[in-house]
Amino acid sequence: MILQDKVVVVSGVGPGLGRSIVLRAARAGADVVLAARTQSRLDEVAKEVADLGRRALTVRTDIGDEASAAALVDTALAEFGHVDALVNNAFGMPPMTNLADVDFDAIRAAFDVTLFGGLRLTRLFTPALAASKGAVVMINSSVIRHTRQPYGPYKITKAALLAASQSLATELGPQGIRVNTVVPGWIWADTLQWYFDYLAKKREVPAQQLYDETAATLDLRRLPEPDEIADAAVFLASPMARSITGQTLDVDCGEFHQ
Image (cartoon, rainbow, N blue to C red; front, top):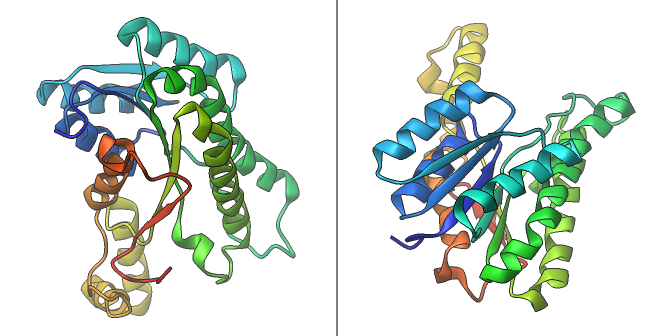
């Protein structure tokens, strides 16, 4: 119960990692504010939080819009009176193509969510987090660890988020706010399972073969699951990480070494 009676705000709540972060925070004792653009997804996860005996507040939010993001902050504080942690999980996916060919407007749209959305929420929640000596956790991606094609557009948006996170740690540290980053690798959940099934059909091999081939490149010989990544976010949001800031924690079963 390392988040007992804390209030945690999670952006980008959907059926995957966002849901896992919310539920792992609730299991750790937190009440949770859920933010996303799709109300039906928020309602589904909120019910699961309630089943765990914790309070869930859903706020339909477009983090790319200043007024919408500000309303999230006002609603959270009106309901709970304080906020102890912000987990920026929302991101915009740019086109998967080479930088030499990508449409710049498409990259700008991804920056608006991944970088400026996360920065906007952090700025708006700063007074509340300063009051609670709280924490910000940025969810990044192992795309920052490699230069494989065609991940260039995705990498530059996530690399910018990492740079912002490190600078925020320095800027906000004197107010008692910690800012850290979780860097997931592969995430063995619905989207990746669908993708492996798709590739397996193209290659006419069992999907398990693709899993085994991928896992063979990782130190632990398996792919991380959403709850394992969520646990890292919960740890960094908790008082157990009270002296940790400006750091990145890779959760990738040993794919990359830092």
